[in-house]
Image 1 (cartoon, helix red, strand yellow):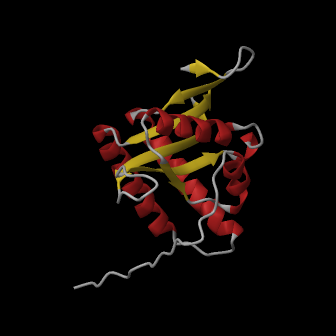
Image 2 (cartoon, rainbow, N blue to C red):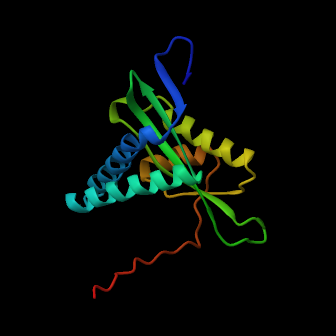
Image 3 (cartoon, rainbow, N blue to C red):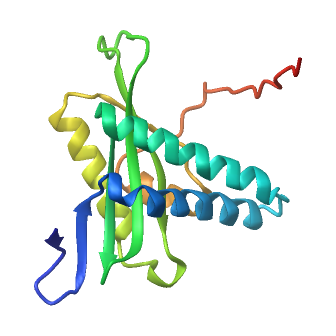
Length: 170
């Protein structure tokens, strides 16, 4: 563990397999908060399923080395966390590498906001990408998170589209 400054009891560290439950809890809280702020009703059963699947994703990706996560904590209490998943995608003219990264699930407990924790995690993810020659770093930002990411050089991309496909039940 690395202390953030000499006079602080707050620690910044790389997350491990032992932190998966805390990371998943923050992932869920992030979405619940976003949906509440947007006045979108959510199904608690679907949130539980999402949290369970996120745990499986983290376990698999920690094992394979394709996920890296960071935690800021005080006395074993997780105050803020975030993760980066590296995956293969299509090479493009400005980046002939197939490796890209997604920054995801950055969440800070409400009473700990405004202390720069999300920014510390974001900078660590950017540093990871620079050290590993990953040029493309993507994220989906909430309205409150956009200002943090813009300060770190992220820009909105106009040409991204998405379609949610409903699965057919047989």
